[in-house]
Length: 416
Image 1: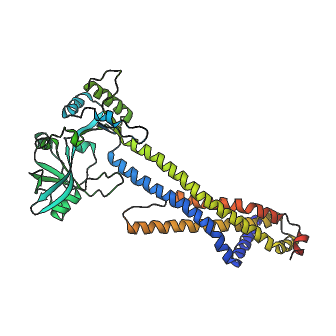
Image 2: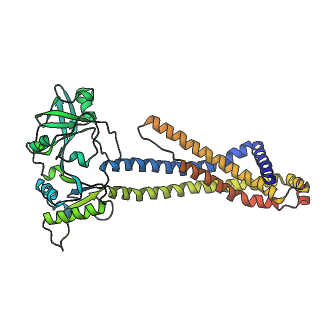
Image 3: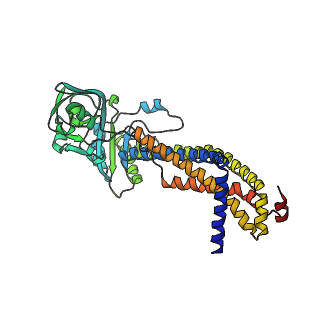
């Protein structure tokens, strides 16, 4: 109880000292405020980018592998001339994989026909990406509909002129997307019946969205264009069964493809197996660097602010030497004097830290109101800001507080 009473009295003395020197207090806060603002702002920006990226990567699906011609890589040399000589994936590769693979729940062939104009009566939508997909497209991708359904097995195998259209395409053609189901639209010069309308995805960092896309059966698209051409970047998407590790699916898939392509044991693969974790792992490295850079940038600001606080505390000790002498002559213990000045330094830094965090929070609100980006200020960043402020306060105030506590009461009282 005595300790808490002394603590409360020290707190009152510290607050009184801060109130009596308002201008000095405000100037002292600036360095800490700027430093904490810099650190938490960078952390919040990186967390926001990280969250949005992982949301985009999640759309690729977990335990999903992409058999493609070119590998995904983000560092080192990229011998594209060697990869360009690899054979293009064919529909027969999908058929052969379906006979060999045992650990998958879905497998589909997909090709892209970009930048086409889709028409409905007098309305048209430009720059639409057409995806030609085989029957298991709904098993390898997460599809959400606001109207209609997915292709039936018969429609897919027979190459029926049917389509799934994105929200923005439906809105551009029909104003109300829910009205699109059952309508005939013009795709690649052919009349195609809309059987399903995708729910709105929105924008993401990787541009993975069905909003401006149309999906048609691969057998139907093959009637009009050679979808096995390298121009359409064909790929095979493989979704592993639940409970089967991705590494096991990848190993089986690699073995099956090498068997299909008749690759000898001493020869390297002439295909690429890509997966979403390659993207997330590379970006995690980038985000770790940005976190570190944010700590360095903000750390210098906090360091300068800490020196400013320490300087102010030395001045405060000098100004209040006479009062310290009086307090000690009346029986004040050394730790009571020390606690006063230490609390004053901590309070200064804490106020600066809270102000910096408040500025970051206001910034997130402004960005949310001005854009569609969901900027986040996590509680962990608030804790980092507060703990950093308290730590700087202790470091900046400990020496001045120790000097004040060691003053001789008689000499202190005589000081003018």
